[in-house]
Image (cartoon, rainbow, N blue to C red; front, top):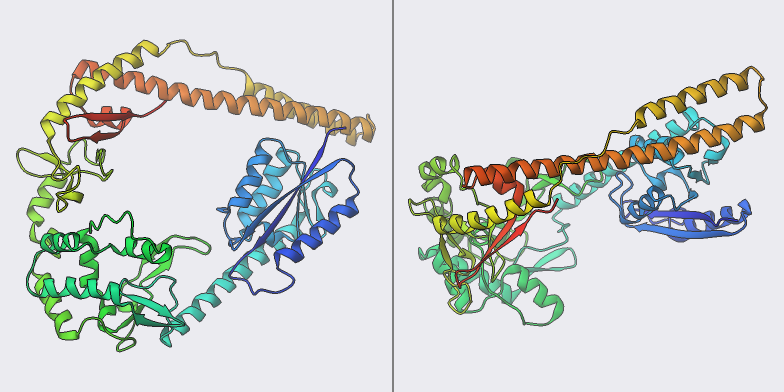
Length: 499
């Protein structure tokens, strides 16, 4: 007898109250007890757990692993404590329970909802299931609103509710205190800005004095190790610090909000809606210095786009064909291109680090294009030599699927008229379902192969274009080239896009 595989799925969200009924342990007990009551011989149980994940979407590692095994046909039955454990999104949950699982002949059981898909032959549970799914989704929405309201109330009371502190501070309970080593770096940045030093000068000073970046400082604090510090600051990080009111003791919260319930993505909120509480925590920078810096930087390079707006507007309509694909082969950072007549790619990340291998690494755009074109012509010929024009014949999958559906309808009519017994009906229907499933799989495979053939044909057309034009075009670069690595010894490496 073939092994019967049951998948236990357990989920607990941090947004839910930690009670005995929703704990992972309680869910496991309820599901295990039900499996024992099923009394299925030769059973293998696989457990999937998502601890700390919202049920409003299916971007969860446990459920993704489970669904992958379902697609591979390796699961016979899925058991959850209740519908909300599987998901709180009514549409997505209903789609899996009503469409996907029956397609792969997977039995779905929700213990406390008294739902077992094997009891609904040709049905999906009806209005009761749909209502329960909607109730769970509405509960999640209400819970989300309550949590947001509670967080905003705590923020209005001055409680520091975010996980990470701004560089220069550390959390002490619900409050902020000055983190002296990092605060010293913050003071240096503000003092230099107040004296009129440029961003490039500040970056150079931070590198020379070996001040770790905020990310490096955080990693160093957690690991206790000072190794592998680049001390290469990004100008945008410094710009953000110079305009951050938290350094004068002002509490700032509510700068962003979630796009949708259960989503990890957020969007900025207009500054007029931010929560600001002056004199909330100890200041690192005194207010006169902060205001002086803001006044200086508002008219200088803090807003380089404003200062060079005409140049930027003129250049952005003629972006370089290789922009975004050229990287430093030594440090791995993207190389920036100048907007001058003799355009060149620069590794600006290590511009202030003379002891690095890619210090002031620069390559003329015209030279780089010439080298890449030589490689593209070789790659184009390889594509043309290795591509066959022979495509498989189109199968009659759709016609066969239509014939199976017609046969199922005819079979059902014979069953209703009493021409065949229930046992014969189930036996023939199972055979037709199996044939339908195999044909559907074959059709899906054929469609994937057709898509691949389309990509191959597109690459062949682009390769022919490259050989005919003998110059780089956006289409050639986008289709063939993934990224380009540039090294100091006038060497380049090209990573080609695969079929």
